[in-house]
Image (cartoon, rainbow, N blue to C red):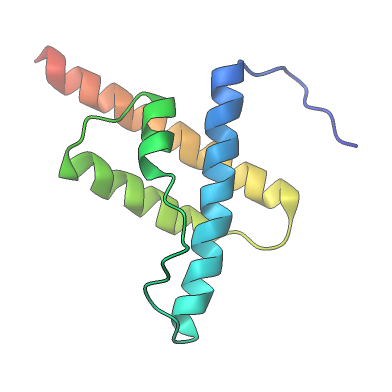
Length: 109
């Protein structure tokens, strides 16, 4: 069993878990889409929950577009390797946190 070098706060762990699951879901449904199976009713959408857990949810189209671009790009980089999925989830999390700082900077102007 692999143990982390540092213990992350529980809210960060929750956000990373949700992102990790969303990346896997997007990878699966993208493969189904490529096979000709579109618009599956059973596809979960964790988007709002993830955005809220990272503290970025503001309900705007811009935020959702940035989020979608990050998640789509990161989901294309995963395969059946747990450590790779965790790495991509962490990168997506950090990108969302950077975006949050950008939004806060715009609000202060």
